[in-house]
Image (cartoon, rainbow, N blue to C red; front, side, top):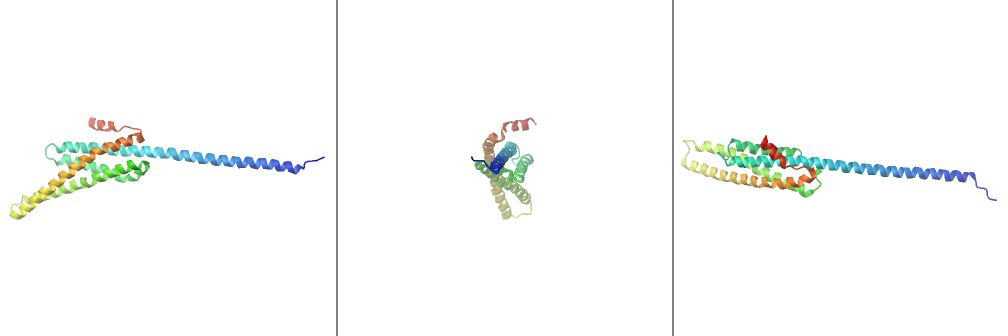
Length: 207
């Protein structure tokens, strides 16, 4: 008759315990990994939504300010104090964008990122050109009024004034054209932000 060795039962008991510990470790690892991935996923979604909200509001404000600048240009002095103030407000919005540009990478869509950044670049250069031209024109217009100015020098300054004026008008037209394209980028951001930016202009008008 065969009698089992008690050590064999101990081995089976130890093996069962070891297997339970091993299985528990695997499940704990899988659970921790899953929890980490879920936490990362929701954090990424949260950051993307915040980024879309931020840049959507910046673009919306920028589009509104540029629209007001264009309307102001049609009244009185095209580049009077009010128009210039609107343009400087637009430039400040771009500075806000520049300070937070790294948040743009929270948007997963590379096409949206490229569109926003390209639009900002297309606005920055002509806006700076308008400010430089305005300042230079003020200097030249003061010089051309001098009674001591020689005729040939006066003619040269007047030609220079005409050239800069035309260049400034071209820059403004380019800014206005680019400003209209901001709305397309805003619409692309709305699904990510889960928010409509159409109401911002109404709020600004009422204010």
